[in-house]
Length: 112
Length: 113
Image 1 (cartoon, chains in turn brown, purple):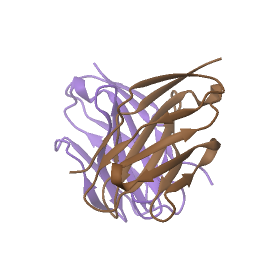
Image 2 (image 1 turned 60 degrees about the horizontal axis):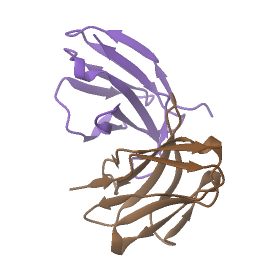
Image 3 (image 1 turned 60 degrees about the vertical axis):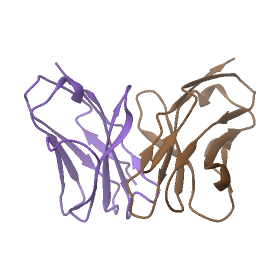
């Protein structure tokens, strides 16, 4: 069955520090992988997605993610975090015509 | 282009009542998906509609239903509301389906008393 695990419920970093949010998935075929961000009181916004090809994917707001098939992971990274990055981040997995399954989210707090 | 809009934004109902939520997708998008977001369960897929047909369904009871109109607008209905139905209901649209980038609306926050 499809599943997504985000092992970190809450992460706190200092502004300017690097960030890595973990995502592990379980999927029977080649997955489509997504990272979404949700600011308080708002809907979700797509940061980046992986369908095929280059395993290092660049997204908006300076985020990137790397697909590692051998580890079933799709971790999100950012070299230098800004205070405006404080939000909740969701990893999701799906496939062709499959429903999208979301992880439980990681709440990011940024200290000045 | 205008984004995904959802109405109403906030709703308070009592147990046993029913509720209808509305979603207007981005112009040209034919796929509309609905999600329930709660602090305990996170984001859970309710169903997806494409060209007025339900194409995918999550694991929710039959009290949750939906439909899509010829202009791609979608409605979601919950009958016999329970306290546990209190949640943020998110609608997302895409051109052809959930495998593409989905654009989310701001959600409807439902409180069941």
